[in-house]
Length: 426
Image 1: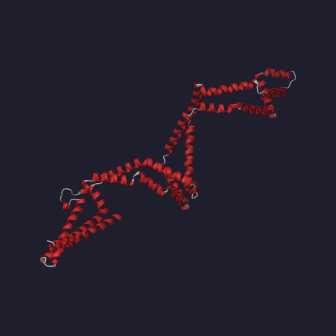
Image 2 (image 1 turned 90 degrees about the vertical axis):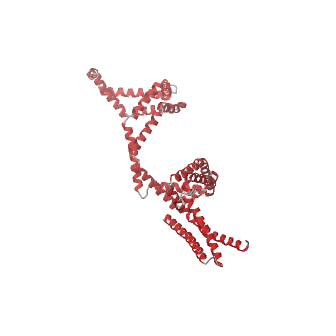
Image 3 (image 1 turned 135 degrees about the vertical axis):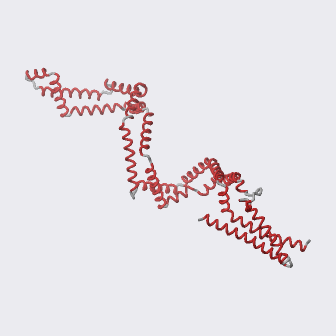
């Protein structure tokens, strides 16, 4: 619609300029028919000079875009003939005049983007709009995502990170931390208490007694039979043996628990120390653990777990996006409101954001300027001549027609002035 309006306006101005030329020619013909007698001499001078001015300016305007009357006169059709040079000059002009680093930074300072962003986000309708746009964008992204490819990427990423992770070294470091200041002895004490408590339970003693009798009956049936032959009850004997075992074990546990220098504690310390050292420095042990890790990573259960995680996430996300009270939408609105409040009440934060934007702009400005300039030049050079002429003429052609109008009127005035000089001076 805008292009049609420009074309219509251009046609009207062309007809108006042409009408002035025709009017000047009619006046000239009328004056000559009166043999330039009296006032007609003045009219003839005006009309003659007006025609010359109109024709000269018509030639100049037309020559800018095309060959006048289709005749390839030198230095006409200036714009299409110099398209490449015009494109380069236009690109340089835009780059230097509009995209200078100082000019861009000045615009950022004047615009104060942090304050404007704070004011915009502070409006509930804008925060709600941002939330809706975010939900829409996420929904579109999910619909275009190749689920299997994402699953493969996640699985490969987990495998790659896990393969690079030194599990033995990390475990050794954790254990070193846990064993500092003999903290691992606390674990031993707790284990001893749990064991003693377990042995003190009647059901445990009954279980041990039953097991002693059962094992004895399986392994030494003749001995058990002999006990019965001499009048001893195997079950009672098993119970007494289990009770003695419990008392002996408990006493042993209490001895270890009560003596910080007990040989079993020292043996436990040495075993833990050897294990930690092997985790940290034994290549064979580290490789053994790494081999188990690789075997675990090759198990199909890991891939199934990763696939299940992605499926659960996408299912939840799709369900949330369909809900009118979307959690994602609410979170975006909440974050936007909080950010707006933080910006509005913290001038230091606003200044920091603006400063970062200025620094980023300064860093990007050179490449941005050159990139836009090259784009402008390349785009103009790719236009065909007809397109270039049409677009330029539609945008500035109407104003150029005023040159023809002024040429006609100014030319006529100059003709009258020359006639004055001829009559009164010469």
